[in-house]
Image (cartoon, rainbow, N blue to C red; front, side):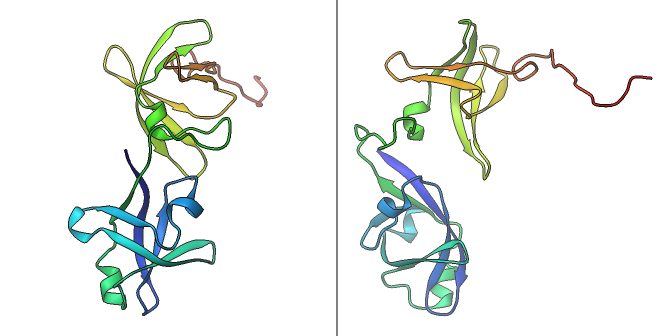
Length: 180
């Protein structure tokens, strides 16, 4: 199974390094020197990581055969794709790969059907489940433990305890202003 693990950003310096937007919880495993990664678009790869380092909080990679800024800049916006065994699970108990969560049924703690996970959006502050409802509309569910209370891979479901207004139109409006 193939997973997108990073997106190449701008060239860094003049010796062929690039910044990367990491899209994996295991960069030390997936983006290590010697790793061979498929690419999207496929015509730019496969790419073999020669070196990697962190500079000012950003991961910088250099690929074999990429020796100057122009070659590095030509890789910009390329997706890096790793081959992953679908049977291998993350080491942490409450961690999941995207492919494990896709197509899970989403139900409330009371058993009310909400829909099915069709996409996972990885934002800087948290991940979001994009859930397609039975009527075809979508709802965004933050993947935080206060809301997603259980992931049951055997039953193929995610149990949620949504706050008012998250999946319905009945939001509670709280105000600290005096009502005078």
